[in-house]
Length: 76
Image (tube, rainbow, N blue to C red):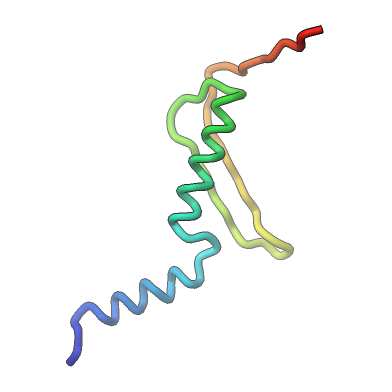
């Protein structure tokens, strides 16, 4: 029996296998990076996060706008 959406499902599965990072891992990494960034910056708007395969590993980019830097004072 032929499933009408089988071809689309198989194509999607093959595309996901070629991805550098699956969607679940990407979402978890973005959440962790945003949590760390919030400790150092007062962020505004969306965060851009990309992972691309390079010649010798991966190129990872995280970008966001911040309204201020949260400075820490050392206690002596």
